[in-house]
Image (cartoon, rainbow, N blue to C red; front, side):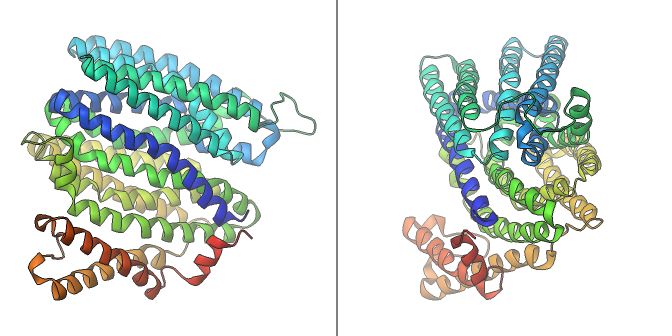
Length: 496
């Protein structure tokens, strides 16, 4: 199967698996919101952020690197997998002990401590599951990863719903989350062992320097980079909880959830993209560069109109989770933070290009600079602007991350052509939306559509008609501005 078809197939499989859970989790969150209120949602978000940071520490930067090494040496799957697990289990023990000490001296209420510690148990399970993910992606067997994700999502939704109804509150949701992670591993691991490999400790003809020391040395640059990265992406929630309160963090979390949920789309695309890019890069930097350029055009062409749509529909999305004034400020938070989606999409492609170029040591700087900037901006903005300041800090740090990726790619043979890949989707989105507004104003002047909003106040028909016009005009704009071409269509259809 050709690289483009392989990337498309794997992206679809990963997206279906992941977003089956995300969709069910949204309905569970809708049930949680009026029960827990802003304070409970804030506690839940802070626990996710704290344990999310520790999860990245435990993973030790070996996610994509494990996929790369197994792709390069499939015969060494078992040794690479086992060595990764040893590193992660040791780090998980250290992180849990650290967190136990932290919550003991933090002054957090008893409920806060219980939520965080139960959530932290998942770092052992998820570290193992993500090692299985890396092996399955290297062997392009992501359908088994998706099966585990779907089963886990259904169990989490069912248990969370029942335990909320039973009156267990946030602890019911926390335990449902933990049980679902155990189920994902229990389903996915046997499928991995049956369908990948070979699972031999010393396969004939294999010569690979796999050892604990070698693996830790390999992962150290990515470990530092990913740790810095997760801190700058999650520290705002932790700082809001500490510097303001759980309620402020709940308002911020409610507005940020669209960005967090949808930013997984570029991540899934990156996971699916990487094996094909790695193989191409081993043969020719030019082939990998062309794959990167095409991937950049595709992902931005998808994310930019989606971001625009979410900006316009932030109010009904936020109020769908719960009516009333409690989360009114979450609307503005969402309208700011959601513009991190195209930035995340671009950074994902550039990230895979740098790994293909074996320049992962540069990720230390790429992670450290935005992290320090984000912490500094949050420290200045949160006391004065609370969650709005945290939102702006997020966008600034994401922009700096993209700029650093591009800067370091300039020193390699893997930098794609940027003018068309970056500006083309922006221009196509602007052109299509401008034409949509002009056409709708001409035909239906009473709907009050404008460049800055959809006609939401006029009912479903004006809203759906305006969206439909945009859906029709946008592909035409992509082809008119040569963001997409007939060659792209042929690549998606032709497996060779």
